[in-house]
Amino acid sequence: MSKNLSVEHLLGIKHLTPDDIEIIFKTADSFKEVINRPIKKVPTLRDITIANIFFENSTRTRLSFELAEKRLSADVVNFSASGSSVKKGETLIDTVNNILSMKVDMVVMRHASVGACHFLSQHVNARIINAGDGTHEHPTQALLDAYSIREKHGNLKGLRVAIVGDIMHSRVALSNIFCLQKMGAEVMVCGPTTLIPKNYEQLGVKVEHNLLKALEWCDVANMLRIQLERQDIKYFPSLREYSMQYGLTKDILDNLGKKITIMHPGPINRGVEITSDVADHEQSIILGQVENGVAVRMAVIYLLAARIGRN
Amino acid sequence: MKAQVIVQKDLFALILKRLCHQLIENHGDFTESVIVGLQPRGIYLANRLSTLLTDITGNQHIQCGALDITFYRDDFRHRDVPLLPSATNIDFSIENKKVILVDDVLFTGRTVRAGFDALLAFGRPQKIEFLALVDRRFTRQIPVEADYVGKYIDTISAERVSVEWCETDGEDKVILLSDKKV
Image 1 (spheres, rainbow over the protein chains, first blue to last red):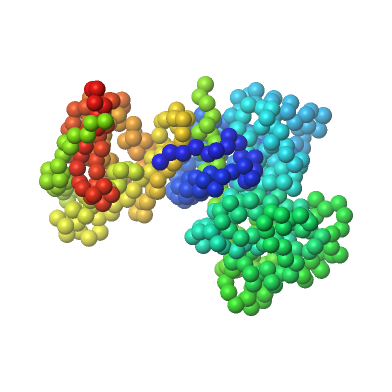
Image 2 (cartoon, each protein chain N blue to C red):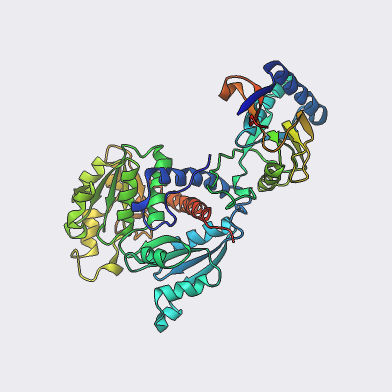
């Protein structure tokens, strides 16, 4: 079977069709098998060069992208804003065009500004993958979350997923909502009123402020981190109070009367949004998410690279 | 498009049986040998051979796997649309084993070349052999020959050979498809 994605860049889940997501998942199935072989590498992208451009800090996403690229045999160059000419006043387009003039075919970019990847895709000649733009989207995280749920539950259709925590500052939340809804799941967001944007009902999600009610409703709970680095004012009195109201403990999990799946996009603040014994619980698929991250990113890179013309 | 059946059901069964006996001649009861079918169409042949070999040799544990070669092909980015992979399923070790790669049609040889590369990601076999149900002679683009051949068919590149299986297509047969003008 052969099929193309409907997009040339992965800027956000919003632009993908359910068909695109299915193609990515199906391709990721094969890459998951590849990364569990004795030799975890395939030669497919040996003539492709990819630049990972990170204007914001990242550990796992960057590592995951780099591993995915290397396991596809692509050449990889890494760039981070600290210690670069960005500090000397160079513009985004100039920075990226300079990198592209060294014959780079694809750019994976994380940037603090919403829409930075979209802007770049209109001005440079390379495939762009959004690795997080401000509080907007983080498409590969949403794809790997949905892929992990699909792997655990078989299908996303009709499944109930609660996203708990700092919804307002989370790009993971928005991408997850788009992705899960496109695949037929029901989505609820849960958190303090100050951390849920007012107009979120218009996205077709349920809004709940009581953690217990949300957990009773859902099949899967995705626990998000409080993004203190993005909060310029205080949205709740203290982390301790947040943790008392919205922290998931083993007691709550064991007394639910049903087995729900626990997810977390990382990095975990143990003892804040979830306790250690929940993070390491048998119902938690957090480490599975990380493994799936490499497979899903390999699939996205493979499918987008197929559309790069040969010179 | 003109379709001409070139191997009927009875002959098809006879060819499979003959291939099995040829394999047994070289591999005995298959304790040191494994069969790997190339995705997508070679797996039907691999499974059928494995079942027949079990009947003939009595070995209930003949190991048979499926290998996808999509990521090892040499035509990535030469096509307008990327090929989507099929499943690979090799749940046994091929280290120091004799591996029989199996595909339905040997045409340009490029698939088998990719198959060798893909196979070596699973270990270092003692020996690799190749079996094709149909060998389209004179169309090779890479110097690859099969160790076991069901039937030689002389074709031109514009023609297509299709192997059909009763599991998926209702009947075992080999069809030659050609443009009416040819």
